[in-house]
Length: 273
Image 1 (cartoon, rainbow, N blue to C red):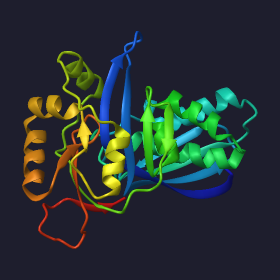
Image 2 (image 1 turned 45 degrees about the horizontal axis):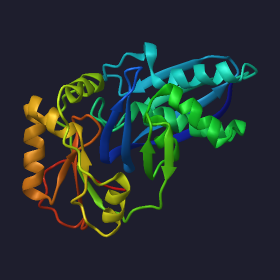
Image 3 (image 1 turned 90 degrees about the vertical axis):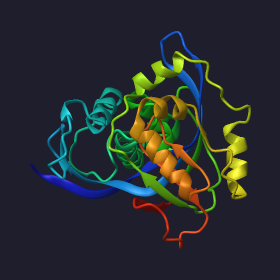
């Protein structure tokens, strides 16, 4: 297999600083309002462009139990070929996984976004078309194409990059339990969610001033009440930090802190925006 070129791509994890679930649509999906922030924790992709058409994905470490028959990187190549039949190269990818799987940190979505960003630049694809392609792959992928601090609306396809927030410490705990997103939405549909009246932009403005009180996630009460290890992780975090929050539908939780020099925190990831 002849190699045309080799590229190293970074795929950062995300946290949801604000997540409100709005109307349930006729197709069963939900509209959301969210504030997404990418963080230091990242997967890395070694991408070889090769003459043979197709895509080959290898995940490292090999001990990870992943189903590669329907992964997001393969889907990127499929969507690309559907739109650009004249593409005459393939890709051989080594995916170095560091983002915990199934924890609400957007690992698979970020991997896809990193590859799409690379292809966008390689093939001079417009930002608008890249966002359309990203949404075909997953609802978090458009925001992760942008990276940084992003306001998200609709089903995830309406994305607005915002000015960067101050650099805060991000302290992350992952209980190691997979929370199925579809199940979490069903839990939400079964109750009257008491969402706050303030918006994701209100949360953003507060964070610019160092105020963490408007952090919010509609999934947190329903997930923590059904999964004890998530409730325990949130409680332990809140004993040491101003506020703890679930990211996505979980199970990972995080806390923010202005000072990264305080070592009294729980063991876990010590990151920043």
